[in-house]
Amino acid sequence: MNTGGRKRVMLLSVSVALTAGLVTATAGTSTAAGLGGAGAGDRPADAVAVAPSPQPTTDMSAAAELYLTHVLDLLESKSIDKKRVDWPEVRRQAFAEAAGARTTADTYDAIDLAVKALDNPHTSFLRPDRARAVMPSPSVPGIGPPPQVPSGRLLGQRIGYLSLPTTEKIPGYARAGAGAVRTVDASGPCGWIVDLRGDSGGAVWPMLDVLAPLLGDGRLGGFVDADGNQAAWVLNKGQLSIDGEVIPKDLPPNIETGENGIDDYVTHNAYVLKRPRPPVAVLTGPETASAGEAVLIAFRGRPESRSFGLPTAGLATGNASYPLSDGALLLVTEVGDVDRTGRRYLNTPIAPDVRVAFTDRDMVRGTGDPAVVAARKWLESRPACRQ
Image (cartoon, rainbow, N blue to C red):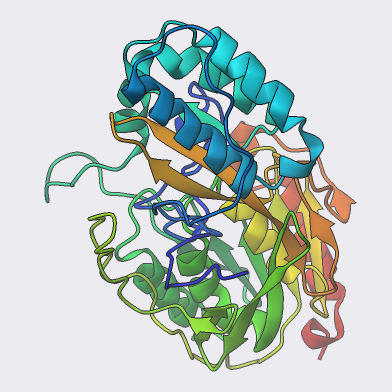
């Protein structure tokens, strides 16, 4: 399965917090994780062989019929859940719901019905007003608060701490994070804490680029589709690749969809830590979602890695976004995440290795945060920190 630059799919996407009122979804500039702007990207449908839609039993306009047929074809051909659905029956019900439709908007309830049949919290259909709220708008320098970027600090004299937020604005995210790693590493920490508790999604590749020096070269994980096809995430000397395609520093524009490119996407972070292959403690919580979960999964199976905190949101899947002709947006979960050992993750919360309860107040306060305290205690017990 190709999930790389050629089709800009799987760039994991929009944060759960942002889309909470819309139904959880992914977006980004394409929103890829993971996929979408790494999470999955916007793109036209591939030519696929699907069962023909039944002719409506009552009068529909040609525009409404073509629109509904197109959406049903996308869901049936692309969804990771496609094999669990009785498509002839779903199509029958959808066309019955859309009977007499004259405009594309008249088919929206029918599309909702089809999406509901997939029973996937990461797949959704956004009407034009909601789609505009999810898709990023151009930012004006100096207007509004600056976007969050990764930050770091030293805990005591021996433990490095990195906090990765959602990729609200992709350009500059990886560069800022790579700088934070270098700054903290100047003190030569023996172990690291990677805090994903505030990472509710966005583009996964900038996140992994930040953490490349901690992850180390090799297979980090991958995506798997409904047919069992896998596309590996691989790190080699700072360059991330998906299914053999290197993630470019700047994503080019998509001439097929007219989607803008993304400058300053990743840095090809080849920095080498002063103390390579350190123990890493990953902090998770219920807001760790989508691309944030993909980052957690990249540490699963890595030697000297352990997770602390609370279970994640349970959205460890990759979406592709399909802009529709009237401004609506279809977000289809096409793949699930796989760790480096081959274990699959879908829409089930990922439990930490060590459960540690914490509150939002603990995270804001910083000192005395029970998850940080537990992670630090474990790190200081590891051989690398006892030398």
